[in-house]
Amino acid sequence: MSEELELSPNSKYISEIYTDESEIEMLKMDLVIVADTVDEWLEENTSIDPDICRYMGMLFLSLANRLESKRN
Image (cartoon, rainbow, N blue to C red; front, side, top):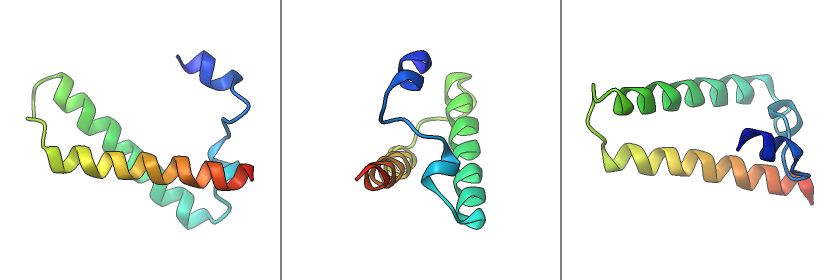
């Protein structure tokens, strides 16, 4: 799947979406937390919380919206 996304004309690097260094750092921290949380779920060390799922969804939706606004 990642290969398909790399070839998509809609895909961008983080530095192409965000220009403010503090925004980039906040996004990176959020994405690391998401990755760690999903790993915990897959290892069944933590139960899945619907509120955390909603937060993750909002994070990715915000990123997608930001990406689309850079495209226009």
